[in-house]
Length: 141
Image (tube, rainbow, N blue to C red; front, top):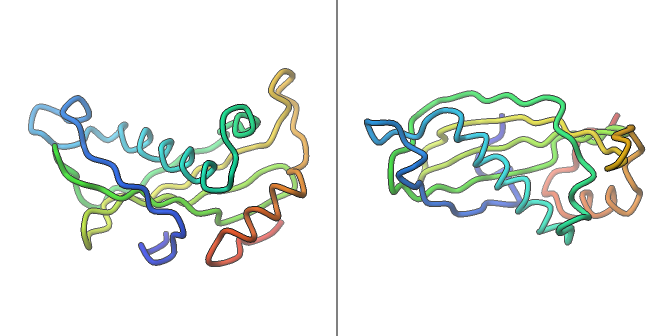
């Protein structure tokens, strides 16, 4: 998974008490909420908001936990497109606190019709926005 420097987008986020267990440590499932914030902010940075960002459906999600975040920590959530396929994309995500890499994630999204949920090719204008935004070009295919 990527280091902090690999991410074009880093979004600040403060850990809230409700995201923690009794010891004040972020409960593991909440990292997927942080990843969702990262994806939303990544789409916003591409200029896609609201219904323009809603044509993607999650088909795979994974996380690797390295260190714990705690209540009131200031985190940075990184999101970057690692792969562009014909109908799907893979985002790499990372959660960082200062110099510490806390969690890595990978989510595969399929582009689909919002009503029928049938797969459809990634739009050319979307591909161009991604390629123009990312520091490192995503893998293709």
